[in-house]
Image (cartoon, rainbow, N blue to C red; front, side, top):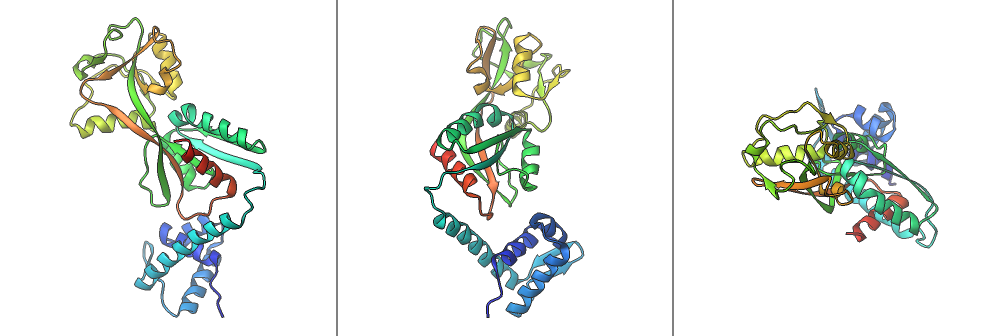
Length: 298
């Protein structure tokens, strides 16, 4: 008689991916004793040890590795089965929770969410904007249904899909000495006040990472101002308080005579914007429909 079930397989995957029974309990909302019992039942049913206990946690035995592959395939198949048997003609209703980093949150998600709401007026969309590092943390904690970021994550629990492109440019006041130029060099930035984004910003990290990849760096500059959003930087630039790296999308609707966009001669900062969701987790119909809506909009 078969005793293995979807819940046990999901718990087993959580144990392997988190590396401990305690972390798996937190991820699955099951008590730690409950997780232990499920693992014991799986091992008893299969007649083999699935987990190797280590001082720092657990890892799968060779048999456990085989079960892990089976479990992931089964969970994915179960999600597809749910999608297939749900009646697509039933109107969507409920709440869709989206978390996004600043650039996609301000310049990509609003249009996507608005168009989705026009198709499905009974769906209430909640959007929360935070920096990239917070988006990843919140998605791992399962506090939001789907996320958007300006930098991919390599966390094995999260799948990243490129859904749009973006370019980072240097925004300068319209009356600045740089404003009449199409590009500047890194030495030109020496001593210039550059308005920075906070440390968790994907935009700022993209600039730093690309320069580092090229073996370059911004020369010493005035870094006396750090702001928390793209719009705050654009407003500060507009007020003549300095220059700042921002997404080009932020300047599309801004008066170019007040804030001009220029590029660095030594580097190009083109990147993708990504949609993020949890791997192997069956998505609710609302989330799945929004994901498909985003992919169709590319």
